[in-house]
Length: 293
Image (cartoon, rainbow, N blue to C red; front, top):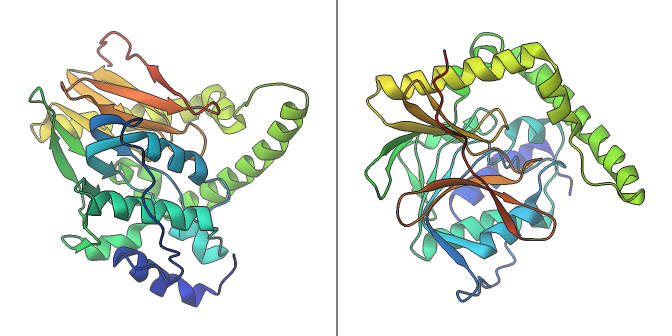
């Protein structure tokens, strides 16, 4: 789907109002007998509006998992990419409608804008289609822990001090994802499993690892300074759950590559859940608590 950049603003207003200009309607087809119900689900970095967004996988995940609370922890819509090139297939519209239906059915849905959908920060404090727009949030788990929920871009020095470099990095990331799709098409023909080129590069480049570690520590320290027991964030596309100097750090990952979410069970237990090609959820058990210097 292509459209002029002038269509971007009315489309965003339409989605926030819960009335998309191409809403095909339809019913929420969740089968309540097959749905796994959590107390809370945290997802971020969906990047609707990009070819790398795994919207169909997210739709399947949402159909199979419901919750009392749903936190959209930033970069849900990729305004950066949409301003450069319009891309909005029906599956992306379906995700928006799915989230709106979830809110109408009684789930408390909170949207915390990130740097890629920073346009929504102009609507902080408002509610559209039953979805609250907030700069951040505090979620109290069933076992009494207070978790600060924030996208995390405020703790990214590149975003705050050299935004042009962030835009450059975003373009390089999109190129890496496109190359990755070609490589995995070849791997699939050879009977090989999916492999992430960008994740490989992030783990091999020392400066990238230092950036990730610095980000995690900074976010955890900010949560502790605010008097919270932990933090839930996104932004760096790396799912993680660990103890950092006595503060629980949780990153729910992304829906471009990892297809991950942070979930809270009814008893307050937190887990990272991944959605794989077989449409079954696999759980990463958090590592033993370790202090990070």
